[in-house]
Image (tube, rainbow, N blue to C red; front, side):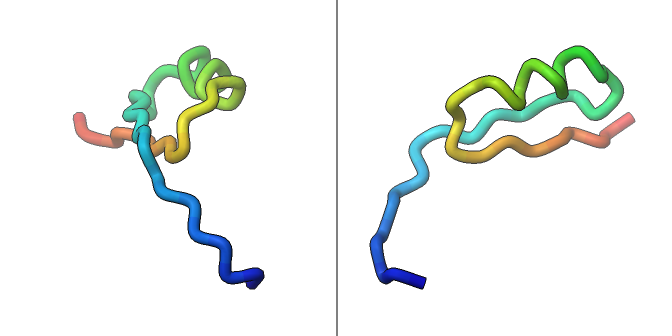
Length: 39
């Protein structure tokens, strides 16, 4: 680890039931992406 701190500014919630939205999330510049697996 190089010790450089990079603050996380954006967190994107993506529905785990939507393959198209998951694919789109890969191309977005969010600092974090998490899958919402709720029913």
